Length: 149
Image (cartoon, rainbow, N blue to C red; front, side):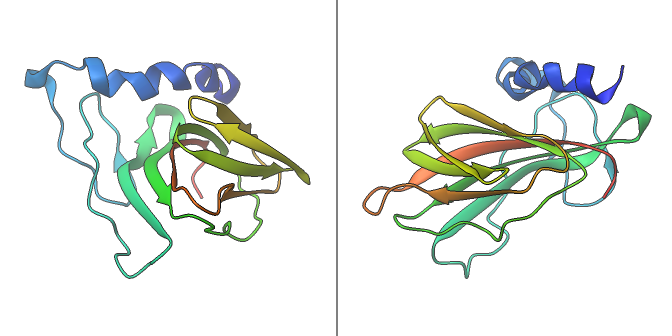
């Protein structure tokens, strides 16, 4: 399976934790080059509680077979929270908006995503994510997949 074929399965991967049987629960994987195994990965604690405009809770970070890196986290941005610096990665990222509105910039084009919308930034494209609202928080679930960083 190549990276493109794997990327097509990301929505199923995102839903898998909701249908995994309780007796197949895996421990939450701390950040690092861990082997990702089948199972449940609950949200971890916010790693930077001092941040005032965003909260990120990691679910998984590790390596899949064939040297493919997988990361998933859930982020909440406070009203008016600006985006992270524009950057590009070796991995592909997918955002699924769970609340509010997100401003997603990819390749110099900014689009507004609402609840249940998904945005994708393929490996190598410059991108940034910000809260599109000055009055309401927004939240999104992120899955990134690609080569080791």
